[in-house]
Image (cartoon, rainbow, N blue to C red):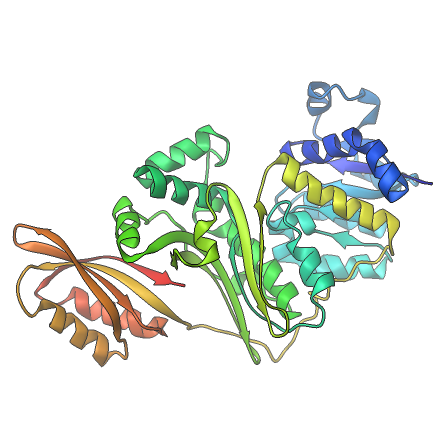
Amino acid sequence: MQKKKIAIMGLGTVGGGAYDILTRNREYIMSTQDIDIEVAAILDRDETPLIRRGIAKSLFCSDIDKLAANGDIELVIETMGGVEPAKTFITKLLRSGKSVVTANKELLAKHWTELTRLAEQNGVGLYFEASCVGGVPIIRALGESLQGDRIQSVYGIINGTTNYILSKMSTENIDYTGALADAQKLGFAEADPKSDVEGYDAAYKLSILASLAFHTVVPYESVYREGITKITGADIVNAHALGYEIKLLAVCKRDGDTVEARVHPALVSRSHPLAAVSGAYNAVYLNGDSVGDLMFFGAGAGASPTGSAIVSDTVKALKGPRCCDFGGDRSDDNIKFAGDFTSGYYMCVTVDDKPGVLGKICTVLSDNGVSIKSALQREGTGERTTLLLLTHRASERSITAAMGEIEKLPVVAAVESMIRVL
């Protein structure tokens, strides 16, 4: 039986979860995988996280250079998060001949190419299943199970915090502020929730998933990003009236040499499997030219689900070839990133309650190449009423131009909201 020594950098929620699984299931992993994994060092700012977990102080390490020089340790798990000092530390470890397992989606989205090439140059591996969708093995599927398929599209609910907030708004009829406060109380949202609710976290993950799916680098800067902070309780109610749920959706598609990648709220028909994904759960729905539609579902965050993905990568790295290449670091100079895209759209417009108003709005939409799929008038109050409009597919530029003109119509009090439709 092989005996392997590893280290963990950052013993927070995720690092602690990985440590717990490795220690709790050590004998099970030995019996099923024929490998004995020992956590031989833990790097952190101080000893406090170790003391809280009853871990021997002899494992504590505060010097990355000392850790990199330790010849007994061949793999390090990084769960520090953020770009620095994680990037500097991982660079030193790869150069010292140690493989790295990481859950750091921001670092990968911003420096993936540099780090994967460095790993290849030093004959070691960089593994990152835990960086996207928690314990759901979507990266392994894209990199090792679907090599024969041209992936045509990926749709995902890949941020558990926003899905929890939107689900809470949907089922309990509370507003965004109340749902966010509840998510923070339960630990699903940080005190500063910007990365989640403004879509940054999902954009980082989509950059990784799209790069893997399309075998080219899809920089996170090329991902269109819009968060959920403008979604109101009225939007949720209106979506229900039209037969939809609202989700923060990550979308990437490839058409020839053009890649489209975007993160934004979307109306998802209740007949679509993604509409049923509630709470802090995540799901990825993809289409391959041979396999057809596949859906991956599970816990998208948390100590145990993410820790499970980290342990999976750790076992794989220690048992298999040291070099790990998922094929996502190959830049293609021919690839173009869509600056405009097409979608269906939902619009909520407050208008004067009198004849001919809908006709005026339809004329503006038609003049801009947008056609109405359906319209619903909500019960008005006094002289005003609300129109809910669903459009057929149109370009983003067309709908933006039309909205600008509609807002200027004398019969229109306000365009309350515009949300894309899956």
